[in-house]
Image (cartoon, rainbow, N blue to C red; front, side, top):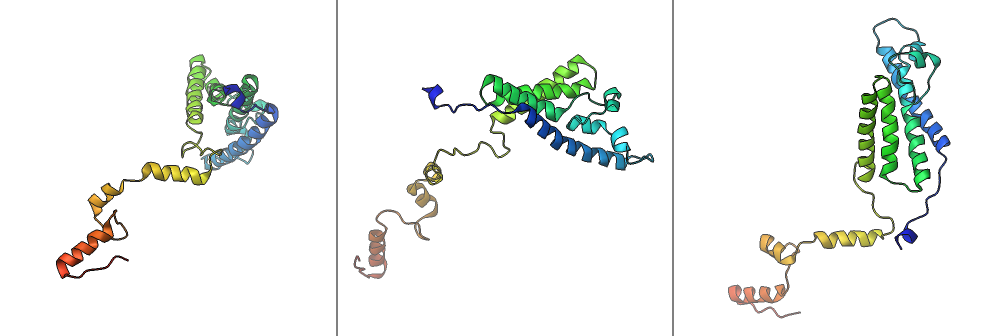
Length: 207
């Protein structure tokens, strides 16, 4: 029954998604590279965005030139494209979308950062760190605000359920605040008539 209720996974195009991610993060890397090139103390030309700080572009998006491949301080692959391609490829192979795909993509993308240190422990360390971060983030809802509301539940019913769960008993409210100001307990009118008659001798008839 559980397999029947689970929605069928639709395979996705990993190559196009990786290319799109590479373009977006490559643009972000180009912007950061331009900022780094502008803030340098040496007198450099506009080509310094590629020849001097181009490693930032390769790190974020994968716009890798032959100069970047041979540069000692630059990565040899792209974090953005690698993560997106590996994540979707894992989802297509496993035929499900869950936090494990994020962790797999994070491991390969984190390993890219470790490549620049040219150390196998660094590759494993950065890969494990980013895999844990991505997996936990996706498992906890992939949002900083927590899990998204269940779209299968009516919004009015969901809010009514929240009100019922958080509503305090009227007895507790009356004990702390007392009656009045729109807060009245059962039998309030009868008790009011008795108080008026006792204090002022006025007999108020029930309406």
